[in-house]
Length: 207
Image (tube, rainbow, N blue to C red; front, side, top):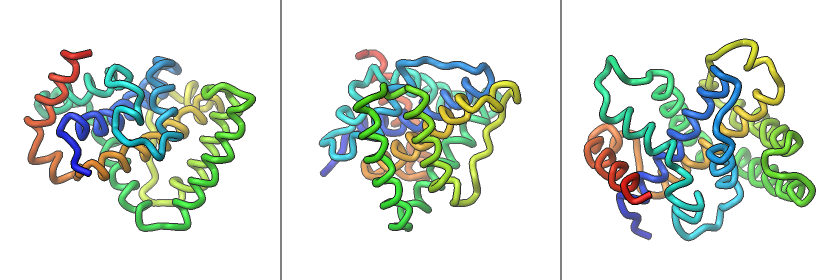
């Protein structure tokens, strides 16, 4: 299937949205509930036929699109280096994960188990987040290098925030899988920045 540049850009925005939300929770202890839900819901839309189906709508990725636009248009002094570091790490770990059928199977089984929990709890219920966070620890955290989240100790030390961050990072891996399936790559991002910047601006204008 051939994907449009807009679809590639939305998938990339999913990674940037996760990176932004992780940073906000780590620094401030809170982030947009709607933006978090949009990312987490993508974990359970494996058989979707389009990028928009995975995320629900372009509007659900508004935070990620804005962050993507800022990062691609900023000079080196204005870039948020922490966001860039998270995005690169997620892309790198997804590439490693794609070579481990055992971990991929474990994640699939873990998501099915979590899906059954959602018959009783909402997606952002602490039990569901704990399950997703534990799945991240048991799988992605086994790969190296591990993502080191920086922020305020008072927020990072709270189990609820830690689980939310790990669950989001798992969603970031999902977005990275989608980005690769759409034909994305780190080299393409490096050499096609203007194209993705224009696409992000066009999508935002239509939201």
